[in-house]
Image (cartoon, rainbow, N blue to C red; front, side):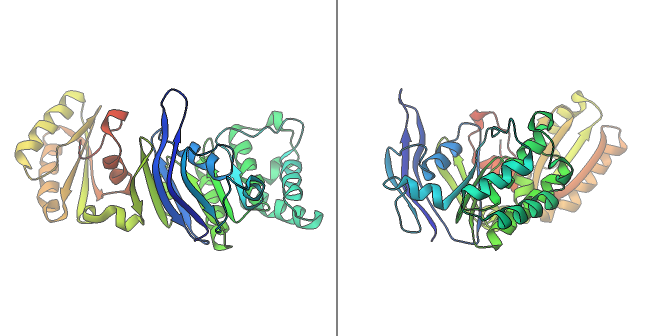
Length: 319
């Protein structure tokens, strides 16, 4: 395994425990999605791997070596796109990407070629020579990714790389994240976008209050949910939504308790009950209580929401 984390714990002053006995392993060629609510300890974890923060206890191994004992090695072996925007004032995207590639050991030709490839792949070449002060947040974010990917280390860590990025270029960005793994890197991606990440990641680790609450492939995390469906109704108004939720408890007694958010009512049902649930929903639509309805497979995002603590402000199908 290229990256091994064993029983990692990080305590800050005042008794705040950011990471609590975290363990997982990641091989070269894999993309790991790191999920969790704000404050779950994701950024703290990445900072310890690259040597920016010292663990309280536990161990980190990168290709068998200890980054705490040898932080210079960690900087050579790891590439990091931080959560905050990188400082680009005074340079263009092309200059910033080429400079970082050269610092990380690429010769001039290699740095120029990799810069061109990434600018084109992410469709931001039209801003390659634009001063940073005139760039949008999304282009700055994509530039920061290119800086981490131009001459990447064996371990690449990306902290919310899709923030501020438009939908078209987010898809291009995920393709480049996959390309890093296909080239032999071990890639850790911190993101809140479970739906998009599901198409790219090989494994997921979910953190809740600093602890690992799930670790596995998307299929493994779905588990028993694979035979379930999501019935979503858009009610005529909020009063109708509350009435629908109450009716579900009696008319579809074997369904999960519904979640109501404004006019939306969402409930998980067994696949075997889909025809009956759809007929019931159609009857509600005919009666004028439902404007729209859909039945879809349970998504990985739905599963994720069942794993994190409800008191953190998340709603789930199991609420």
